[in-house]
Structure formats: structure tokens, C-alpha cells
Amino acid sequence: MTSPSSAETDAQAEGWATAKTLAEALPFIQTYDRSTVVIKYGGHAMGHEAVAKLFAADCVLLKMLGLHPVIVHGGGPQISAMLERAGVKSTFIDGLRVTDQATMEVAEMVLSGAINKEIANWITLAGAEAQVRGVGLSGKDARLITVEKVTRTKKDPGSEIERVVDLGFVGEPKIIDDTLIRALIGAEDDYIPVIAPIGVSAEGETYNINADTVAGALAGKLGAKRMLLLTDVAGVLDANGELIRQMTVHEAKQAMIDGVATGGMIPKLETAIAAVEAGVGAVVILDGRRPHAMLVELFTEHGAGTLISA
Image (cartoon, rainbow, N blue to C red):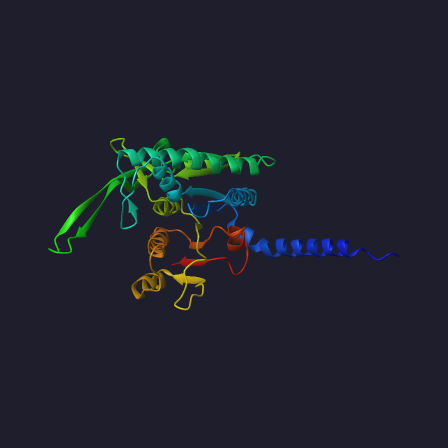
């Protein structure tokens, strides 16, 4: 009898490793069966087409494994690039873009148009064989997100007098009507909603909304088992630069007070805390640029980022 070639041996070993991985994932697959997972897909995490295609394929796999993924996407870098091309200068206050009428028109064009439809299309292409389809929406569709105008106050450095800062057409979710989303994820056909963070006021005006805030509010309304914040960092790091794998809401609040969490991580933790307090099972902050990060997080023992839970 001739011995198998080294190539066949390697292929067989890879097959056994794949089978072992699938078997180990079974308890996690059962845990998330028919559960809703809200995924915030960040502007920095979706910068490359190859990464976007892998993300879309992973979303299709989640749907085929019995989960209900709902995607909320950002697009800050893409909006900035388009504004720069149009010669419109951006101003930020406390991390929020001041949005006048011209900026709002560009933001809606980029978010609800190019980015939203591209993500939905990648999902439809990845799920063609299984007939899993991406559906591109914004918060304006079926009045999914009714907003109220965001206002901020800032102290004058000289007089210490607080003044109201007008951010323009920047809103925050006031009412989430999840009827359309529930109809899509509960349909016999396999739809994956892809939502742009654009909302509408009670008077019908269009507003830009922070995508993390939209994801948190929607996850709370849907009673999601998990909310995944895909960003461009591994998660929350401790004072030594090591990844913190799990945090309670209390520990997350303390991390902000102690200065362990700084800069852009603070609003993400605030979003995570609000979502958990609204009833989301847990929120995970993880690096969306890493291939299959969502699968590692949901279907392996150690996860891929920082998990915040009650």
C-alpha cells in the first residue's frame, strides 16, 4: 500500500481541524439560535473592499446559522472625504460633526446612498446561493427613527458662562419603530437589514445621527442578545496596553472615571452601558478589520474583544 502524499496529509489535517472547530462551536450556535445580534459596522472598519466582502460573507453565515443580524453602519471618514472634495469644511464639537444644510445633504447622499447600498449589495452577492439578501434602509424609511435635535452647552473660558451650541441637523433617537425590522428578520425569506444612521424629526426634517447611538437604541428596542461594535481597535485596553476581555457596567463606568478609557473609547463605552441598561444581553467592542472577528467573538470560548455586561 502506498503512503498518502504530504499534500493529502496536510489537506486531511486541515479537514479534521475544520470539523473540530465546527463541533466546538455547536454549543454557541445553539445559544444564539433565533437571537437578534445588532452589528455596528464602523467607518474605519469598512475601508477596504476585501474586508467588506469578508464582513458580508460572515453576516450571511450568521443568518444561515439561525441568528438574526441587523447592521447599522457609520461612514464618518467617507463623509469627510466627500465634503473635502466638495470644498466644505467640517467643524466638530465634542466629537459630533456640526451639520448645516449643505453638510446634511452630503451626509445623507453618502450614508443612505453609496455606503448603505454597497453593504446591502455585498451581502446579497455573498448570500446568492442561499438566497440571503441585504436590504438597505435608513431611519427615514417607515419612520424607523424619529429624532430630537441635539443641543450641547459649553462654558466660556473667560466668563465661565455656559452657552448653548447649535450643532445644526444633528439628532438623537427619540422613538424607534421596529415594526419594519421585525417584519424583515421574521420573514420566511432571509433578509438582513442594513440601516444608515439618518433619522427624521416629528416635523419631517432630516437629521444625521451618531451610528453608535443608533445601534445602541435599536439593540435595546429589539432586545438583542448581543450588540457588536466593530471598530479599528482591539477593544478596551488596560493601563499596560493589554486587552480587557470582560467588564461589568460598573467597571466600564469606573474605567472612564479612572482614565483607563480615553478619547474615542469613552463614547463607545457610554453607548455600550446605555444598551446593556436598556436590556441588551451584552455589548462587545472589537476590531472589525480582523477577518472573521464576529465569528471568533460569538462562536469561541474566549471571544475577540471586550465584552460589557450587567
